[in-house]
Length: 277
Image 1 (cartoon, rainbow, N blue to C red):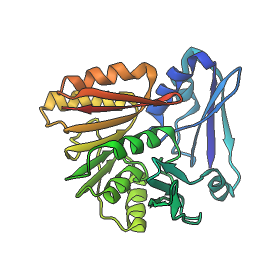
Image 2 (spheres, rainbow, N blue to C red):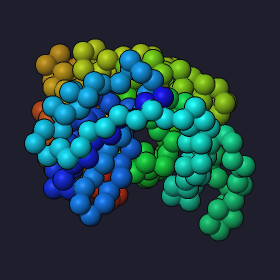
Image 3 (cartoon, one colour):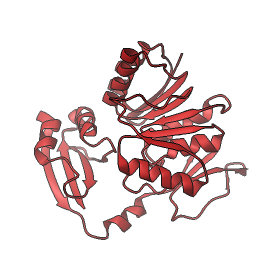
Image 4 (spheres, one colour):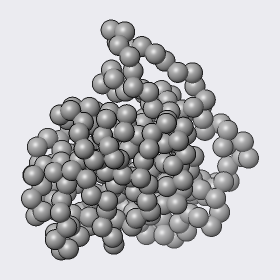
């Protein structure tokens, strides 16, 4: 396993992160210090961007680019960093190797989601996923079909199924994400329709309610494709994975398809939108 890291000046961090997520849409590790911000990508040799690609993406704000080989037991030790996440006192997302919990808050029963991320992005702990889950819980009563675009490890799709949406459709361009979502759906006892789709080039599975936890460039491309191909937009779209500086551009892109901003919400540097017709 290889770890590729990029250090940049704090004032360049948002731009560098946006560029790096183009190369690694599955997500990056982030470490902040007073003098720099470091982003890291993990993967097997041959499946990661080349160092020159990282340098070009980071641009003038680059402080240092490095490649490190990770010890053989990394695949076991990374589990230490995954903790259960409770959202809205209704949902519990936990990795399979931790014990289940039955109550939270005033003693109410939790909707529990068990996730093994594998090599796909999404354990429920990241702010972008939490924001989506929070906003999903606040939607009117679950009814009809739900689609999760860029599903990662399937957390949002599984949550939708457990909240009562049916059918639930999930898609992702990465093979590892499709495999992880199918495995996690089976572990949670829910039925998902999972497909491999390049959302920048092909139509996403349609549903009246959609979650899309992706990067801003991908979301904007999806919005433009919907307009250019005259596809039917969803009735409600929760879009996450956004930095503050990207929100207005995403809102404008989807407005062309008739989807209007109803709410924006932040968690640290990350933000999410609720858009509807």
